[in-house]
Length: 161
Image (cartoon, rainbow, N blue to C red; front, side, top):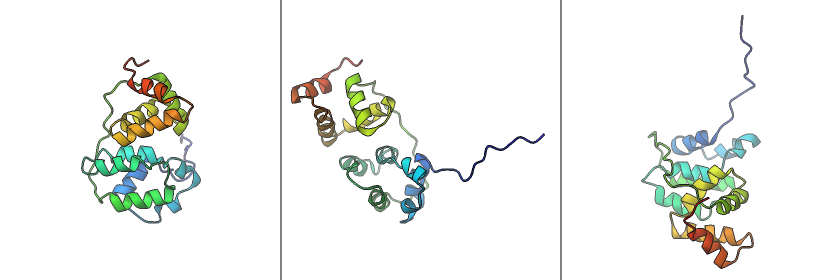
């Protein structure tokens, strides 16, 4: 007896498909050719996270974190293919060793970027790697109505919930 196939058309591109394309193919029209569903998986922050696993370009990717939400996706893609050298090398995803941050920080970052809290923890870890990222995180906290003092207290809180 034949099993009914669950195949419903071409496979949709995922985050790692986008990263692979940026590293290996670098077609200027790639982003324009993506479907609406595929564009949903073209998450600037997570693409930078994946690309930053390459120690040779981690500094450049850290600079892009500062403007990650200010660049339209089509231009963001073109900027990446101009900055990332073509390579077939595999860069494993390095998981953060840092524990979860304060629950309130994670809720704010999760709401700001519309992501689950486990991803918000990674975002916070990345933002805290640089002065500019720390300043951006502080600005995000203040944008919710927190005072300078309250934002700083949350960032200095070592008792993670």
